[in-house]
Length: 608
Image (cartoon, rainbow, N blue to C red; front, side, top):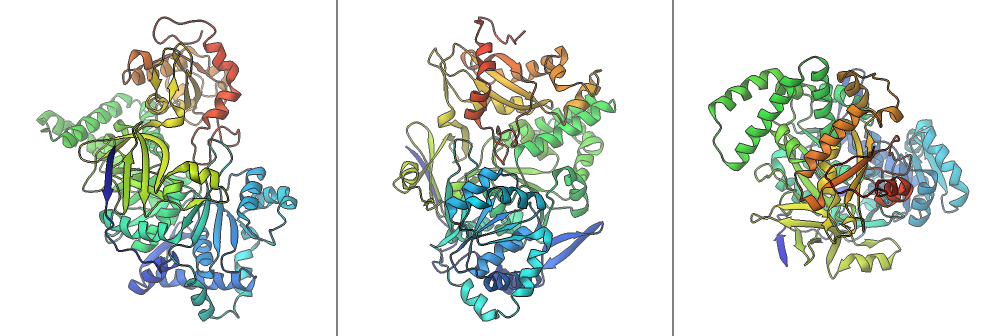
C-alpha cells in the first residue's frame, strides 16, 4: 500500500473557530483592503476592519431576530460580497450555515432544509424566494425567511442595534475547533445529496496550513482574486475563507458572461476556476482567431507554447528556433490573452475535474501557472495541490500539510487529516461505509509518481467492464474529447457490451462561431447540427485523438451526437457541472441500445 503523509506546518489550536480567521486578520492588518465591490465602472475597496464592522452589525441582527447558537440557517444566493458577509455574520452569531446552490430545484431545497433542520433561510432573489415558497409548507421548522432583494439584510442590521458588542464577542467564542461549522450537501451526482459535517478545525487548520504551502500565491503583497465559482460549493467557500486569513483582496462576479470585462477591470493576481473555464478561454480565442483569418497563426502559437512548457518541465534545452517563435508569438498572441484576463494573473488554482496536460502547458507558457489540485466536499476541498515551487502538469500535486493519502490495493485514494469531514449528517450507515478507520474512502482511483505527485486515473464506481472483461476508466477518454470547442459533454458507455461507445452533446455557445468559421449557417438548429457531416467529422477527430491515449480494446468504436443539451435544469448535470452518469445512461438508454444494435468489427465507425 502506497502512502504519503505531510506533517502540519502550523500547530493545531483546539479553541480556534472560523471567526478567528477574520478577527486575527483585523488585528494584523486592519486597514488592508480585504474585498472590493462593484462601484459604477470600477471597484471600491472594503478594508478588513470595515468588513468586520459590517459582519458584527449583521450578526447582531441575527441575534435580535432570535437565532440561537448552534441553530442552522439556510442560504440561497449567488457569488457576491454579501455571501461572505452573511457567512461570517452567522459565524459571529454562533450559528451554522447550510448553503444551498442558487440553481437548486424546489425539491432539492426542500430536502436540504428539512434534512439539516434549518430554522431560517436567507434568499437573494425573487426567483429564490418563489422556489422556496413552493415547498414552504413542507418545512415546518423554518421560522423566518429573509429576502435580500427586499432589503432584509439592512432590516436585520437596523433591528440589532440594541445587541451589545460583548454579546457578539461571547457568541463568537462559543464554538471550538471540534464543533460543527457548516453542513455542505454533496452535489448529488449519484443519488440524494448527503450533508457533510465540516467542523471549524477543517477550515481553520486547512486555511492556516494551505496559506503556508501557497504563500507565493496568497501572501504576496497585492494578492487579489475574482471569485465567480459558486460559493455554495466547498471549493470557492474554502478559498474565500483562506483569502480572509491570508489577507487576499477578493472581488466577486456571479455572471460568468461578464467574467472577461470583470477580469479586465479588477486585474486579479490569481484565479480560482474549473477546467471548463480554461477550455472556454482557449476555444474562444481559437475560434476568434479563425474568424479573423488567423487560425493557423493561433494554432502554431499554441503548439509552440506547449512544446516550450513541456521542455521546461522535462529539463530539456530550448532550441534557438523555438526561442525565436516563442518570443514572436508572445507579442502576437500570448500577450493579448494575458491582457484579456486582466494582465496580472500569475497563478490559477484549478479543481473539480481533471485539466488536460495540453491546456496546462499552454497557459504556463502564457505566464499563468495552473496549480491543479484534488479534493471533495468531504475533504473541505483540497487534499493535494501543485505548488508554485513544486508543480507537475498532468498531476494534482503533492499532499498538503496536515494531510495523509494512501492508495488501497485496488488504487482507491483514501484520505485522513485536518481536512477530512466528521460524518454525514444523520446518516450513520453512509458514514460507516465511507471510512476505513480514520481513512476516508474517496471512491477515486489514482497513482503516485516517485516524487509523491498524485494523478487521478478514474472513479471506482464508474469503471466500465466490457463483455470481453476489459476495465475502462471513462474519464481518460471523456476529458480530452470535451476539450474540443464544439463538444458540450460526453459520456462513455460500454459496460458489459462488446465495445466502447460514446454519447456526445454539442456546446451551443461555441457552435455558432464554429459553424460560421466552417462555411455553415451560424443559426443551424441543433437537430441539424447533430447530423451534419462536418460537425460529425469534427467530433470524430476529437474521438480519434482521445483514442490514441488508450489501447484498441479501450477505444471508442462508435458515437452518437444527441440533438439536445445536458444541463443542471434538465437534471443531467450537478451544480458544479459534473455529469450525472447514472441519470444520463437511464434517460438515453434507447440511444445506447441503438449504438449496439449493429455489431462493429472495425475502429471508429460512427452511427450512420
